[in-house]
Image 1 (cartoon, each protein chain N blue to C red):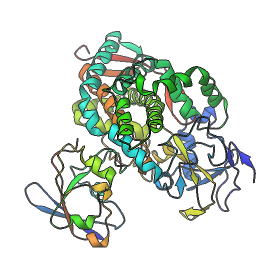
Image 2: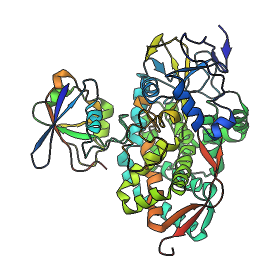
Image 3: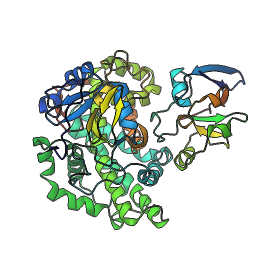
Image 4: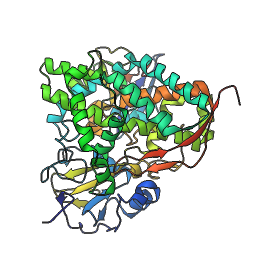
Length: 410
Length: 107
């Protein structure tokens, strides 16, 4: 059997629609909603010849595949490369790219390090920095929200919470892009992201070492589990690397997408101003509506079937979370941004044992920014066209010109 | 169907029904029961689907895993001996009639 993009090229299963499309084409990534819709309409699974994979985008099947870590494993990679057959570009993650029972032990360490309790203890840090930064951009009035707020807040607060001694915002952002873009095919996006490897990876590896982490931060906290023997020191370093991989690009995207949604839907910002208790639900709706992580793969580890479709062992399945989050059969009026909807169960943070372990950190960061906006801002409006940045697994903004009107001046 | 009962603060009781196989959290969300947030959707990450299992039902709800135990230490309303995360209780025939109460705060 042949290989393609580092995995086994399966034949189309009988009865499954075949669709000659590139889900990683820049045109699709920049404006994916039409792709999402057609993917859902074709059936529970679609065969994509370009990569010899299956793709799913209906809510039920996507959730089933994504959360069943027994049949659909992560240990063979969550991108197109099958780690059973080809080398990953970096040593595999010991939390993302692993399955139970090995996964359970390290997940527990990370879950404790990033627990809701830890975030509540650090709430003051999140809020004070957010208040200050939002005040600065409100004073500017018209801003480029990606560079001026979405990037600067996480790259300031995250190293602080983690306890990093050295600061390098660019390296953190570039490393995040590298990790997420590497999950796609060997396309221009992936090559561009990996091209700065030489400059970024050694710095990242260095920052994962214990001596480069302040004692009171989350990073050094992970190392205490090496002292107690729950994990090895090497595992501690790899878990800190996971924090650096997944902790920045994602929240940058979360904040940018939040601002986009509020500018695009001023009526919803009004609803929120009247009902500030909807702030947490607002971010969940941003996750559903924009799906910052638009897709991850799973690999079938056995012959199985889902919704009557036979799936053979070794099949790479592209789980299009963005499509599932817009499935009309699950979400009434899926295409509208509605902060009052029942949004629980969205796949914006994944699902099951691999559900985002940093989600409390993401909520704390975005929640602090949103609270600051509600305190200080009366109106959020587009001040130019928003530009999306095509990413192989993340959908974020390249630029977002907006105008912020200070409270009390309208 | 599996019945489950939610005991309210004023001691009144409400009976709901669900298909077996769902988690108690999913069944409560499907019935729009207030007070359960379940932000993470069942990944044992958020500790916002906290319930207190009433009467003698606790032993029938099964073992608390280490991960759930860690998360129960993170609930906003302090845990009690009969505290569980409702996402970790699978509704089955043997739990038909289970009664729980919902703590005051989840966030």
